[in-house]
Image 1: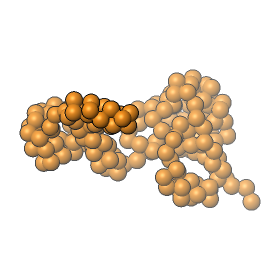
Image 2 (image 1 turned 135 degrees about the horizontal axis):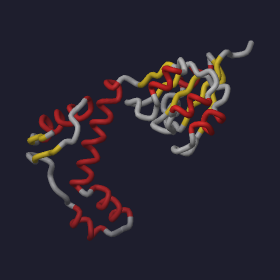
Image 3 (image 1 turned 180 degrees about the horizontal axis):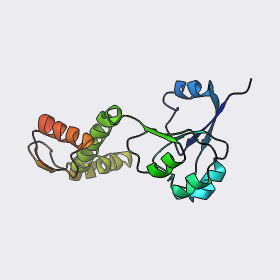
Length: 181
């Protein structure tokens, strides 16, 4: 019995790696193949590469633009395993009768917001520089990488949407910051 679908995982370094059961579930409905392409691959070339694949799971790149859809054979679904549709021409997908889905913004909201705060702390506390000095046996230099506290600071956020609002909540509640957005 042949499996009815051909599934392309495009530019995803993570999908199915942490949770391999996701790929196993896909393999029950069809052949699964990973593709790694240049993020700026032309749409026509991308369509040729993915010829015959009717389900695509993609990362933030490449760009599925109008040219891609004009040259793509039957495509049932593009699913972004992330937040946002910014690499998919939604009008072209609709004209091609292709469904487009994303991970619910609430699923990744916590992880993205926490990572934003972790990166902010790493910058303020000079964590990377300190760790590098320690790894290179330059212990005496570590004192110059003390950095700054985040507690009671004024923090400016550009964007206070789904993720930004949680970053603001973490900064206000956890670090007692005054948040300007």
